[in-house]
Image (cartoon, one colour):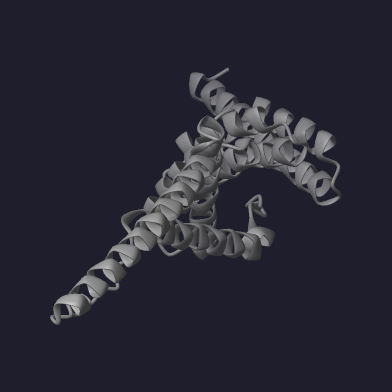
Length: 246
């Protein structure tokens, strides 16, 4: 057989194998998507794994597998697939989607600080994506709320102690005021006896320092309550898996 003919036959066989493998990969991803749409997440995961076996360096298979695992609440495994997917694409939008879903995993795992950082990274890739921006804001609010609760647990008597000190301060101020009034009356009587009455001094309307601190704390508490209301208002949008239809 001619050497050139051998090469040609080999190329044809090799090409047909590539085409067959490609068709198999596409078919497996397609079947996985159908199972996913039917909410058969375990079955869809199996199909995506088969597709990865056919084509290891595929963004699509790893990303979709991450979505299936996410829906199955296997968050650590889902995060690993999203990380792989982010490394397998040069598209900034595909990379943003993979990083964004890593943020969703962290929100489900009650790590809002880490989630906010991941959403921020996703916004660098896709700065005009409103879904990412909204989840970033929610994660920031959640993180602040979580840290505030931790502070209260670490020092639960802080608020109570401040209230007690203020009460003692108020009682002391009342006692001093009563004493000053009595002294003023005595001075007035003395002045009348001498024919030279003293004019009472005009008191300044100044808020005590502790009372001012209490007002500031009250304002801060109201701001926190407003933040909680905003958070609850937006809670329906947090967080959603960003499935891609391939």
